[in-house]
Image (cartoon, rainbow, N blue to C red; front, top):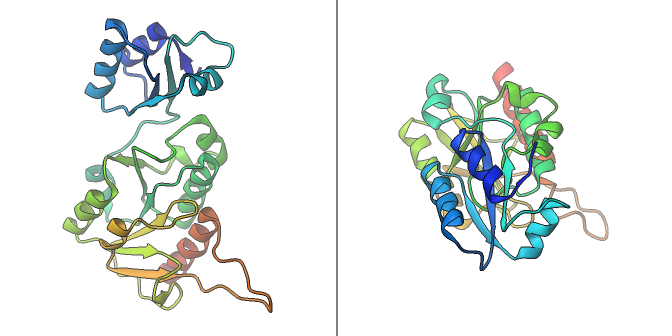
Length: 241
């Protein structure tokens, strides 16, 4: 059913309360019906992105989009209030943009016993059908929380007595040497750039995965979904001891 193209289909989806991940609006597009749609998005806290028309042409395919394309969420989002009640592991993603990476992390986090995934609403992948397919059913069991600001979400976790561990290649403690105090939140950065500095400052510790360097050097870092698997299953191993 998604993506939805056209003012009327998107407006009806909003009015019906269907879970939408984001809405794209063509730059320069205007009119009262479009403004009504944008206001509906704001009321429902659905991100609106203004993109060149060529981007909407590509997203809509052959459908007439009238300057509006919406992407549906595969699942509804949870809240931190709901997910922290059991004091389980939270995996916080600081801007993972590739839906395949997000889906793989969801699947891995569920397998490792995490209680929830936390993602930002902007500059990050949301719960699209691609994510659902890659997660291979894990979204049915693992709640995903979407927040306006990751730093603020970490503050909220701290208010709930969570210990925050950020995974970063510059971390001064190895992931397999640190004690993960409970309740635990593990923060992973986005592809290519790692953690934002403001996010790193909210972490109680920064941990790294040591890389083996060959005679001509080595791979500087792991793919974020692979790194997630390494650290999350180390956390799980500790729980079993």
